[in-house]
Length: 132
Image (cartoon, rainbow, N blue to C red; front, side):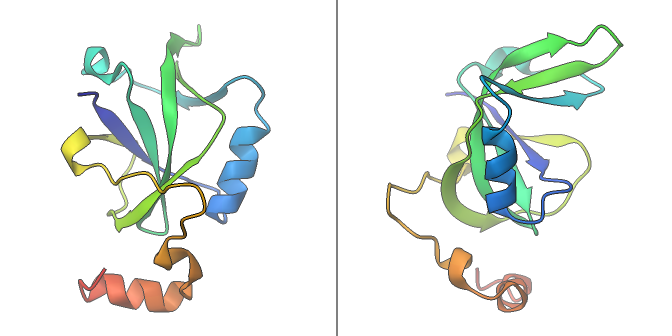
């Protein structure tokens, strides 16, 4: 079972904006990180799960890791956002590992996530109360 990572979609105003950025990157999207994950060997076939407003909203398959030549690394991603059943996730810096058993399932084509149609304030209140 592949290991995944999570990351905040920093600077993205919505999941739609994140999707548009990913799709505009050409054959692969790249994000920069200072440190290479220690468990990189387990990430073959894994994904980066994006967090937006304290919820996991989608995933991008990891294509690999590459050194930038400036002491940093690129996380190479497929340039698409696969929608998943949203689930709460606390904000964090950098990235964190996510085991396959704890990863949210993908949404089927045409499926909507109830969190997508709720007003953000209501969604936040329900999450804080532990109801979502």
